[in-house]
Image 1: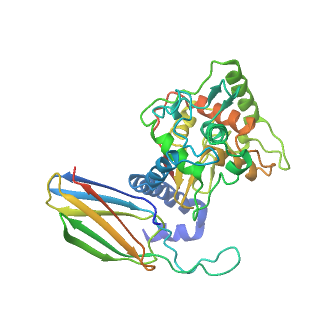
Image 2: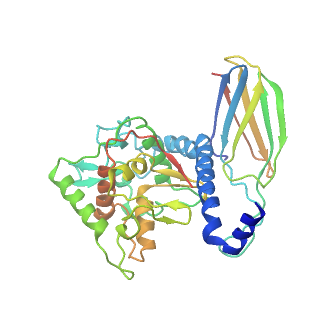
Image 3: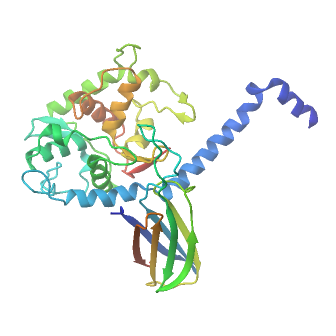
Length: 103
Length: 266
């Protein structure tokens, strides 16, 4: 099961700032475990951000991103109470998502 | 300009390195600021809350009835008043020692089992780390005020102070060997002089913390354990009188500072 996510979205002068934290090992596939075996690649591949159900950001990321990554999105416009949804899917097909209302 | 540059090359390190070093320090501060704004410490708080409420052990109960000093289950401001004396255990305890005590008394777990994995790894954080994050976060904005009135608290404080300056072990080190003089650092990490309140205050108000370089959440018990290891001394027991005394001494030195953790460390 994927670990927790945390998100906050705030409206600042016509721009919505979304900050989202994700729990993920983000394995590069280059690290070795104590037995000398390679730890297999395991990373978030796609991150999707939706505002009121409409996809606004669709991104592809790779293993170059750190463990437990933090993302910040700045979206033009928006209003208090808008529903922001962020979801990810990794290369093992695991997914997680979270949602919040713009404050 | 050319002449000056030439000078730099000839003189090499000493003269020219001083400028970049200061810039680097500023850059590191900026980096710390950026990291703190989106600290994964919050993820540990979320995890810790779930663990606090999860029934475990032979008694199949959660830790929600654990008395952290303000009464059973009172979390608000509990961390800011630790370490302190607990009558039921007849000793001074810090947060993690108390949590271990509750795991044994409330949940009916064996101490060995509950303490088997108190320090986690990046791949598998320990329960203790997540719980510390959650509980410490409930004291945000409150002034650090550890117990210092009970005779046992006074005794622990005096012992912590003595241990801080006591040189021993294979390398004849004490805490003060590294944390005893201003302006010292290890690589880019400034070493705080922890018996001085102005140095201890920012430290005690930001522990426990998420450590970016190792992707781990670390606690004060871990810090004590790791410092002892670095001093080439025998590993102290988790929640021993030694570590609790040192944590009390440290917290008491930095008392009065509003808590703003769980922090983010390099």
